[in-house]
Image (cartoon, rainbow, N blue to C red; front, top):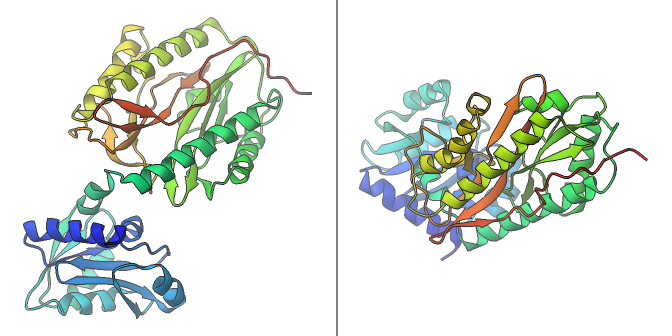
Length: 364
């Protein structure tokens, strides 16, 4: 049994438990996970008695070559009428789940009108629940994506960065990812120097990187469709004592959170392990985001690792551990590793050094 057919079987079993005849999969990442098909226009209909991929004529050749374990149906570009007809053919008044997080209200309304007696049921997380636990093949791809990001960062930081623009450094990192074997970056690369480091999602600008500060570098690679995510904060010159103190606290918080990772542990407990030292050091208001998130085919997926999370970690999940301290007007620190959850603890995939040194990263 192929990996995609096995995934379809597990989804079909979950649907049967809920009394659903099928799930209409509209999220393209979920379509890829279930069928192997990579394209920008597709739906999948999966259930105990149906395995179908719907796309349009532009993708006929690629869909037939890529799709595994499903009948490929070539329809009109909009796909709504074809999906409605396929659902109606499941039987008398079938119950079909739809993905409420990806199916727009407009598309749902047209499907409902066209599908007649089909009873559509809003669902959430059915495929995402399967995706959260990675198999050996997925883990191998994620490990290589993490290794590519490590190599790319070290290659770029081997050259001086003082005086270069954030945008230039971001572009150099993207090129290095490609040279190291990535399909591309897993998200827009962040390079945030000086005061910009206090912006968790800063956009690289054209100002030169100054001396005597910290530079937050957040990057990830895509390899065989799977993502990595890693952040390092590097020093240029001699940063102010407040930034050095923030770095020490953030590093300790990250180590505590990694130490808390283990199958069966509540995700909220991992967040608490990082948040505690930061709050105790007086930086609680400067850490405004969760400590991590799942990574896989998407760079942000289940599970969420934050205070309000109700999920427990399970063996085979891949998450980030990334506490941050952001001091407005001065700078910021974020340290992020990608880890695999195991029964014994965390397998850390990110290997780039985290020591803050006094090395002056100057221009030639």
